[in-house]
Image (cartoon, rainbow over all chains, first blue to last red; front, side, top):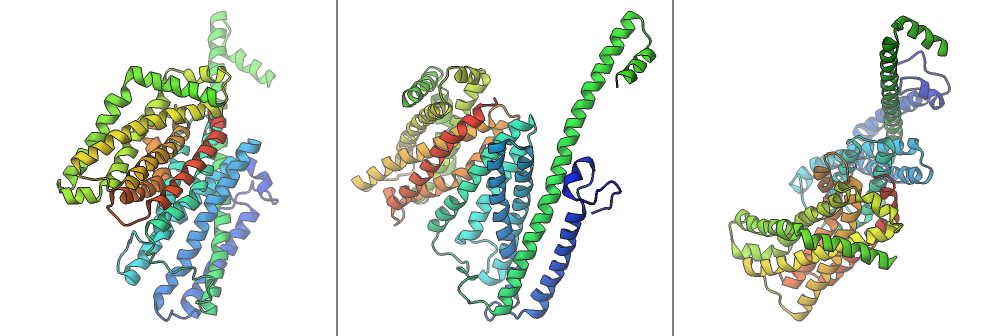
Length: 276
Length: 225
């Protein structure tokens, strides 16, 4: 979040004419996230008690569960934004979908890694195919890696946006199917079933988890906004690059013609200046 | 709409009947996969028999990928997408037609591969009910795979690096098909005590979701190419 003199005080609206992804809004959000993470750290490592069965291992939950929620949030928001793109053909919605899904994939990977780290001491193995939630998360992450690959191939902006939108919506439709099929596939899940709601967790543990989820969601908003603006700037650079290239070719053509007629390139620039 | 779809399907199948690409390249590839699986598992007949359903469906998915790629490249390489659009046939009908053509090809592939696993892996169909389950599962899976494949094939048509992009997009989507169809075949071949018909329902759900999605979204993809 480096300060830029050209950043306006009103935030998001004027980001189009700055080359910065930060403004007052995101900075406030960023500071809130930082403070939130400090609070979560204090709660998770200082105040909350170790679990009866899992001891200190339970503290991984404060990263693992929010990451998973955040990942799903990223995928669902991505699908909604894609739907909006197909409806209104707004490029901003397309870029938002990209930003949201990229953040979703990042946290999906984090969910898998923290899950595996948690698995080793509790189940005695880093990976167990019997664990429904981890396996389905892995399939979903692979699904969305495909989405990111599709975005990476370049080409016409609108074509890419249309294709990506179809994939994003199709992938979101897969979320329940993947969950059900993997769930049936191995019923012997190792995962704690719905530990959030059955009141098994102690009050402070639950409070820490909830706080962590809120902070992670703020972090999601911050990251997605940043990524969205970066995408917007990238898009502008591409457009700008094209305009410049066209202008250059035109200038070349003009010089060529002028040379043939016997004018000096100098008079050409004068004319150009007048036209402008 | 359905008559137009039949027209498209007939056209695609006629192209295949004349070029025989699926028959002469994709089918040998699928059989090759069966042979390679046997080598990988040390040609151990009991192991091969136990894992027949999974190996069978992996072979189908990989070979199916080639068939799907073939069908979509067909339109793109000859620039006939524009002609299709000019023919005033609805995109939904085009989708349906292409889906049917791929389904038929996949089904033919599956029939031959089933014979392959019966011979090579020593799998056996235990009962009439098992045979029926085998048949219905093959049909429903083919429709599901073809629906998703037609949609994603159109999606990657004309993109640089489409050969690598299609598998990475399509295979995770087909993961539930692999799981369900394998389970269903487990029941049919008697290699695991599961209720294959319940898995068939999941396969049906997948097919319905992707058929609906394809009918709705195909027009969006056709608009551009």
